[in-house]
Image (tube, rainbow, N blue to C red; front, side, top):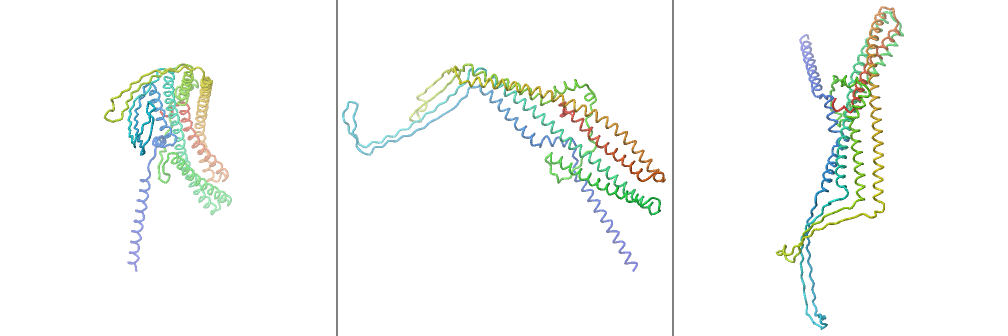
Length: 455
């Protein structure tokens, strides 16, 4: 009998070790399969896969083609043409016709077959049209530069949104660890209070109160876990990445810190922003574009001069293709006398557009200053909040430790203990929350200054 039980024990031990090996390998595979997604990689992915960025990048080719087309208006054009015709006339009966002298002439059945070929080449070139062609070139260049700067501003906004999602994940990771420690503490305290209750050291009210605190801590832990997973989904969805794939996130990602940039006067920050904001530079080129549109509209007041040229040959047999040659060249002058006020309307519309774009540029300048000042004030305020939360966290932690000791000695009530612990929890939460806001405030100021691409 003892031999049988000995065999069973050996079998159970082997099975236990086998299960441990399987669990260890499974845990290793799970952690190994998770890919680390750093902040830089997330930003790069967003800039390469964001739909708006991709569409704006593709649109740059259109503006480049417009510049090429504007230059093409200065170059003579050329076109080739060809023509072929075939005609057959048959008359199966005798007919009577009058000749040139008025005499009747009778002819028999006739058949007439003719073929006709011709080739031609030619084109024209505008010699003068009131500087409209030159203005079109300048306008297309301005539109191209404006589109490039708009794309850069879009990339900065996408970068800021990616940073926001990423740092939010890091904050939720810290909150999850915090709530996990909170749950573990409350479960341990509950067991301790139950033991004291069994020894008649504490009243039953302490047990009920701690049970409620432990249940609440578990709810907060589950909520923190859910918030973390949702924040991961938000980031991966923004990056157009499959949300079913497991990813790890670098919790050591630090905020940008440039004291020379942040600790500066508002006037210097304003000047820096206006020199670096891509949307402001884009608007400047938009103003240049509408000014060129005014020149284009005014060209309708001036005469236009066009030169044309051509070559043609016609023949009835392909062997005689170039026996007959026709060369042509000419000038065409068009002097506008009355255009039904269309030119005046175009000029007026261009002038109004200049005025409106100038107002938009002024409004954007004021908006940029407002963004910079708001971002700078938020950063300074949050920096003070971070310092205050550090002090509060240290103080509340020490107060909680003291209350814990006095409660264990019976010199403090359970309510005193819970109050001190709740103060510590709030201080810890404020610390994590303020750290997240401080990181985000720094990047927000960078974006307001037009410096986010160089963080």
